[in-house]
Image 1 (cartoon, rainbow, N blue to C red):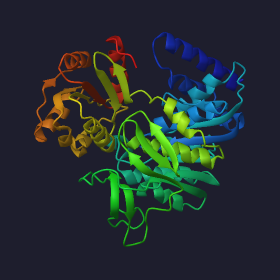
Image 2 (image 1 turned 30 degrees about the horizontal axis):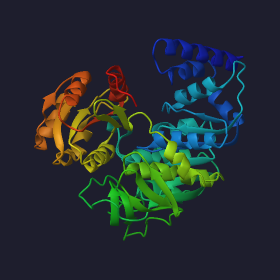
Image 3 (image 1 turned 90 degrees about the horizontal axis):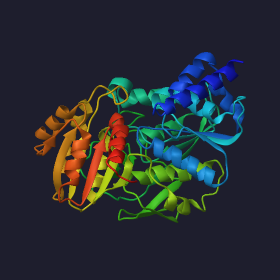
Image 4 (image 1 turned 90 degrees about the vertical axis):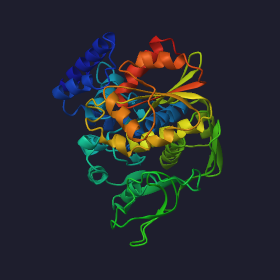
Length: 441
């Protein structure tokens, strides 16, 4: 009876929330768990083929949702928290929304994005078959602390699951370390050639996670990702199971995975990692990837993942939550040689993290390329980001608290494209502004 009541209340709250214009992606599950604390454990009995969880600082939403899309394209029934509600209440909401009014559910797979800090809690309720870890960067310092704290949390979660299969970013030493756990079978994906200029990027995890000495790189891609090795203890980039080569960053981006040709129509070198993570996970669970290239050609990025809106000129919305993400967004902007306006919005709500000191770890000086037309700052912490540009000796053309004004002003210039870079809680309000102004995806 507790389960049925939880499902009914959760479904009712979902309907009411959507009528009020809310996403209803987590609060229904929160109330349902108060009624039936064991609700999420039901998922273990509802899924016949496997539970795949994805965590990591950047890219988990794209990776998780593409995984679900790939499995659904094969005809499977998939449970997936597509809206990115990745704590226990978000998983509960996803489950109760998929259940019928009698609490019944039959699915082939579950694809679940999990917040790194909540992995031990979620793993007390579900037993994943495969865990994908995309990367680990500094993020929300007031919530996670430094990277070693996040690593310890994930390690605790991994140790809860016997015979766990891990799909790890083999270019990230902070991910590779988890492959040393005794209860896992690890598979690695990576980009096995130098692609980007070897600039002085911020290497957040440059110290060996085994012995603590500084690592050496034959080449790196960004942050601490690359071909690393530790001369002190021998820890190094592992043999790569799912290997990317022949990368071209032109539009469309092209590359090979295990000699299989791929092509994607959206931007961002980092997206290659997300795609090959999915490719690897599908292979690990025994699903064919012979049609993976065709799947990519029809896949559209999630909201804010270099998502393009059509006006009199394109407006491209990009979510950037931390130094590594912002640096990659800036690098992607700079590959676009069109004359461009750039709008940057920074908030400090609870889901962003109140501490915005991370802004000083972003290489904002690199945004001032020869094709930059105007730079506008906005958001709750508009003066913090404006001050950061002042210290980078970059002129801010406009400071405003109104995203609508910022977009309209950019649309009225002689630029060819507008980029809007936002952190998490600015994402959905910016999406609403773009749609209200008549933008079409």
